[in-house]
Length: 134
Image 1 (cartoon, helix red, strand yellow):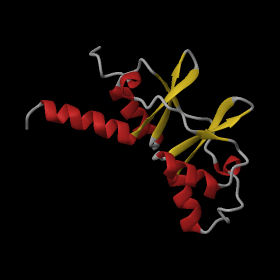
Image 2 (cartoon, helix red, strand yellow):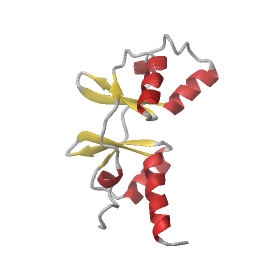
Image 3 (tube, one colour):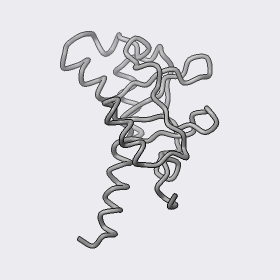
Image 4 (spheres, helix red, strand yellow):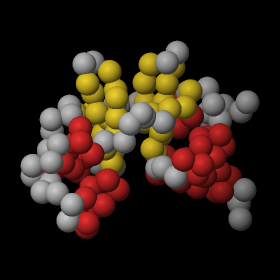
């Protein structure tokens, strides 16, 4: 396996998370402050779910609930879809396509150690394209 082609090489190592009692509005504010598009939801010290900007768009565009009152614990996707840090970027791409998701929690020995997003994949494939000199 070529260095740079693993999920661990491409993932974001900083984990952004919140608790299940955070309002959807406050969660999205935290995403914007940190320039990320998803937050892991931590319950009892473990990551149990994920809340994304896509979830936010469905909530607000659908008028389903008041974002200032609804809690992310009620909206989060669970369980989190994970991939091992040693897997290839190609496998991560296939998994995202198969599950129709934009974020994967990256694990090492079963522990979440990073996040991989569609944006991370875009950067990887862009760099790969530049190397071909087309």
